[in-house]
Image (cartoon, rainbow, N blue to C red; front, side, top):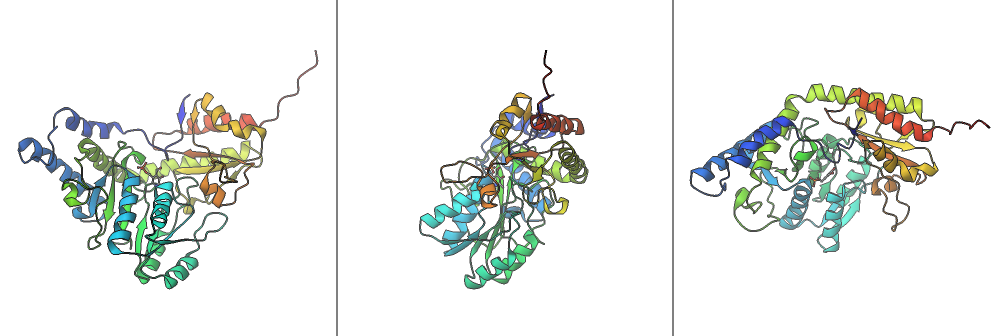
Amino acid sequence: MNVYFDNAATTPLDPEVLDAMLPFMRDHFGNPSSIHGHGRQVRAAIENARKTIAHLINAAPAEVVFTSCGTEADNYAAFGSIRTLGLKHAITSPLEHHAVLHTMQALEKAGDIQLSYLRHDAQGRFDLEHLDELLTTHPRSFVSLMHANNEIGNLNDIATIGDICASHNAVFHTDTVQTMGHYRHDVQQLKAHFLVGSAHKFHGPKGVGFLYRRSGILVDALIHGGSQERNQRAGTENVYGIIGLAKALEIAYRDMAAHQRHIQELKDRFIQKLRAEIEGVEFNGTSAEPDQSLYTVLSVSLPPSALNEMLLFNLDINKVSVSGGSACTSGANAGSHVLGALGADPDRGTIRFSMSKYNTAEEVDYAVEQLAKMYRPEPLKMRS
Ligand code: PLP
C-alpha cells in the first residue's frame, strides 16, 4: 500500500478538473487581453470562472481577484489595505500560517503598523475578549485571523470575530485557505472584508488562488504592470489554472456533504484506532473535537520516544506520506511555530494526518498499523 495523508499540504488533481483545463492548454491559447477572437474566447472563459466562484461564495464577480496562490492573496489583502487605508495598527495570532504571520511582521518591520498578537489558550482557542479589548484601544485596525489552522486543525469562530471587528469598524481578513472548498462560505452573512482560496487545497491545480475583496474597500495592487484584473493584479492570467480553480470549487460545493461525511468517518476511525493502539497518544489543539476542528486534519501527539526523530522517515519508508512537526524550543530550532506557541512538550512527536475524498478506511488502518508498530515494545528474544 502507498498512502497519502498530507492533503493539507496539497491535494491530488481531480480528473474532472483536468478535463476542464485541457482545452485551454491544447486549443484555446489566446491572450485574454487580446481583442481578437482568440483572446475574446479566453477572456469569456475567465469571466465565467469568476462568476462561478462569486456565485458559490455569494459575492459579486467584481469582488473576486485571481492571484498566483493563497500566499499572494494574503499579502495583497494585508499590504493593500494597510497601505491604501493608512491603517496604523494590526492584530493577528502567533498561530497563523507564515503567509500571514511573516507578511504582518514585514509590515511591522517596515514601520507601517504596530502589531498586536491575540491571546489563545493551551489548545489554541482564540481569546475573543482580548480581541474586543485590543480593538477598544485601537479601533480601525487591520485584523487577520485564520478560519482553520493548517497544522492542528483548530476551527475558529469567524462569524463572531467578524461581528466584533464590525462593531469596532476594523478591517477583517480571514485566511480561509484550509476551509475554502471544504465548508460553505457566504460573504453576505460573514462580516469579513477579505477571504482567500487556493485551488491546490481542494483538488485544483497549483499556482492559482483568489482573493475575495468586499466591494467598497479600496486596495492598491501588489503587482504592478498591465491592467489585468481591473488594475488589481498585473500579469497575463494563468488561464488554465483559473479554469481549473473554478471547476474544482464547483465540484467541491456539489459534493461537499458526502465528502464531509466520508472524511469525518475516516478521522473518527483514526482517533479510535490510535487510542486503541498507542498508549499515551494525545491530540494537539482541538484536533479531536469534531465541532471545533477541521474534519480534514488530525494532529497527533505521540509519547516521548527515542524514535520520534525518525517518525516521518519511518512512515515514509513504509509508504505513508504525512507531515510532521515538533515544538520549537529555541530560535535556532526550526520546529513548528504553532506547537511552540501552544507550549507543546518538545519531547513528544507530532504527526499531522490530513485526509481527502480519495482516502479509504483501509488506508487509515494501514497508516495506524505502521505508526503503532514503532511504539510496541521489542519482543523478548529466546536464548538458543
Ligand atoms: N494559509 C494557510 C492556512 C495554508 O495552509 C497555506 C498553505 O499551506 C497558505 C496560506 C498558503 O497557500 P499557497 O500554498 O496557495 O500559497
